[in-house]
Image (cartoon, rainbow, N blue to C red; front, side, top):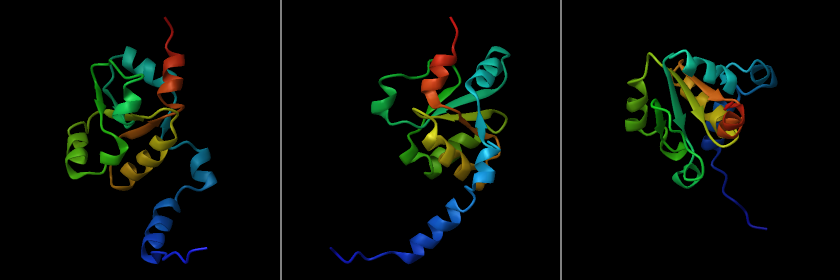
Length: 135
């Protein structure tokens, strides 16, 4: 077994970032929105921006064709130019999506942490959204 060098400063930062993800916080779904709610808002012409944080590879399988959609992979989401792009949508509800909604829950919480209060995670991801669309 190798003796790994643990970066305790990084552990402290990660602990601070994830400490807000308590069961109480998650059970209240403060940053999640159900696909049916999103569909209703889109149908009512409300200001919704669908933000797809999946990789280009994942997006190649299923993507959004909505007029107000944007693709910024999660690994680029916290770059300065990405955050600046998102601030152009301050008067929109920004709904983050990934495949099943796990990555977006974390990304949404971090975006809220930096002051973006208009962001939500699409519950169930694009997979659930696709199932919620009725022909």
